[in-house]
Image 1: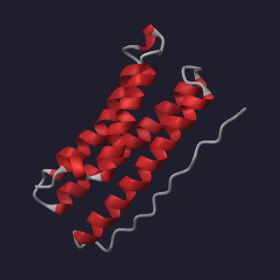
Image 2 (image 1 turned 120 degrees about the vertical axis):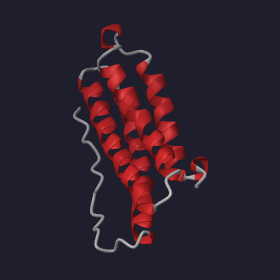
Image 3 (image 1 turned 135 degrees about the horizontal axis):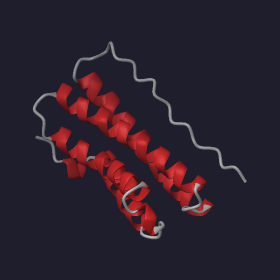
Length: 137
């Protein structure tokens, strides 16, 4: 079993989750069961799936949870974008979250590639690219 607290992708995802919780405290109260809840759930799913996967016996199972984590990260990325478009996040807060999400993605993607190779899955191609959101001013 792996110690997930030593996994850099988990650390970054955990940091992202904490920052999202802090930022969403100021979201409108009518969003408490909507966007606020969805963004928080997507965010905490990232480190939670890394942690759960790290406890799996097989590397293929671990990889499966890393893929789920990556999907949750992309969902989080969308909700960050939507929050900005709705005016719930200012440009500076958006850039901060977007940068941290990008760092988390890069690290998680590297972990996925390493585990995939280690699991003897060379047939997998890991061509998933992060695209920074353009900021409309």
